[in-house]
Amino acid sequence: MALPKIEEARKLSDQELTEEILATKRKLFDLRFQQATRRLEKTHEFKHTRHRMAQLLTVERERQLDISPSSPQEEE
Image 1: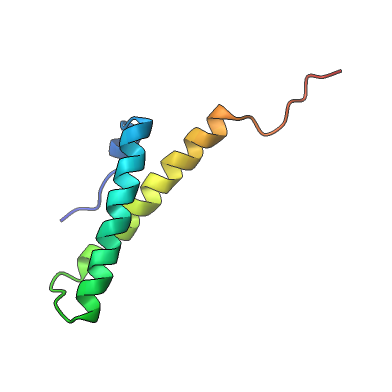
Image 2: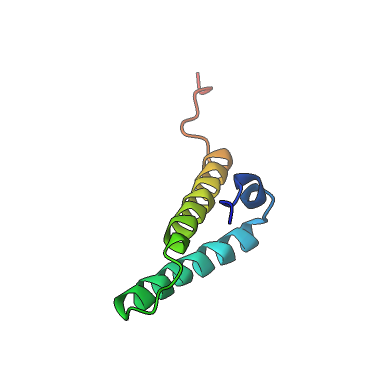
Protein backbone atom coordinates (compact mmCIF):
# COMPACT_ATOMS: atom_id res chain seq x y z
CA MET A 1 0.00 0.00 0.00
CA ALA A 2 1.45 3.34 -1.06
CA LEU A 3 1.62 6.36 1.17
CA PRO A 4 -1.11 8.96 0.56
CA LYS A 5 -0.23 11.99 -1.57
CA ILE A 6 -0.41 15.54 -0.24
CA GLU A 7 -2.16 16.71 -3.41
CA GLU A 8 -5.22 14.77 -2.26
CA ALA A 9 -5.22 16.73 1.01
CA ARG A 10 -4.84 20.05 -0.79
CA LYS A 11 -7.95 19.35 -2.88
CA LEU A 12 -10.15 19.10 0.23
CA SER A 13 -12.32 21.99 1.38
CA ASP A 14 -11.79 23.44 4.86
CA GLN A 15 -14.74 21.49 6.28
CA GLU A 16 -13.58 18.23 4.68
CA LEU A 17 -10.05 18.86 5.95
CA THR A 18 -11.29 19.26 9.52
CA GLU A 19 -13.39 16.10 9.26
CA GLU A 20 -10.45 14.17 7.81
CA ILE A 21 -8.18 15.32 10.66
CA LEU A 22 -10.71 14.12 13.23
CA ALA A 23 -11.13 10.79 11.43
CA THR A 24 -7.37 10.29 11.28
CA LYS A 25 -6.98 11.05 14.99
CA ARG A 26 -9.69 8.51 15.72
CA LYS A 27 -7.95 5.92 13.54
CA LEU A 28 -4.67 6.47 15.40
CA PHE A 29 -6.50 5.99 18.68
CA ASP A 30 -8.04 2.75 17.42
CA LEU A 31 -4.66 1.50 16.20
CA ARG A 32 -3.07 2.20 19.60
CA PHE A 33 -5.96 0.42 21.30
CA GLN A 34 -5.56 -2.62 19.01
CA GLN A 35 -1.84 -2.67 19.70
CA ALA A 36 -2.40 -2.57 23.45
CA THR A 37 -4.84 -5.49 23.28
CA ARG A 38 -2.54 -7.40 20.90
CA ARG A 39 -5.09 -7.45 18.08
CA LEU A 40 -3.11 -5.30 15.64
CA GLU A 41 -2.14 -7.27 12.54
CA LYS A 42 -1.09 -4.57 10.08
CA THR A 43 1.62 -2.64 11.89
CA HIS A 44 2.43 -0.57 8.79
CA GLU A 45 -0.87 1.29 9.27
CA PHE A 46 0.77 3.34 12.05
CA LYS A 47 3.26 4.77 9.57
CA HIS A 48 0.65 5.47 6.93
CA THR A 49 -1.77 7.08 9.37
CA ARG A 50 0.87 9.26 11.02
CA HIS A 51 2.08 10.31 7.56
CA ARG A 52 -1.48 11.23 6.55
CA MET A 53 -1.97 13.19 9.79
CA ALA A 54 1.20 15.18 9.14
CA GLN A 55 0.02 16.00 5.62
CA LEU A 56 -3.39 17.14 6.82
CA LEU A 57 -1.96 19.31 9.58
CA THR A 58 0.56 20.81 7.14
CA VAL A 59 -2.20 21.77 4.70
CA GLU A 60 -4.27 23.21 7.54
CA ARG A 61 -1.32 25.32 8.70
CA GLU A 62 -0.58 26.51 5.15
CA ARG A 63 -4.16 27.72 4.85
CA GLN A 64 -3.97 29.50 8.20
CA LEU A 65 -0.88 31.36 7.10
CA ASP A 66 -2.46 32.41 3.80
CA ILE A 67 -5.56 33.76 5.55
CA SER A 68 -3.82 35.85 8.18
CA PRO A 69 -0.61 37.60 7.12
CA SER A 70 2.15 37.59 9.71
CA SER A 71 2.58 41.37 10.01
CA PRO A 72 1.25 44.39 8.12
CA GLN A 73 4.21 46.48 6.95
CA GLU A 74 2.54 49.14 4.81
CA GLU A 75 1.60 51.52 7.64
CA GLU A 76 3.94 54.47 7.05
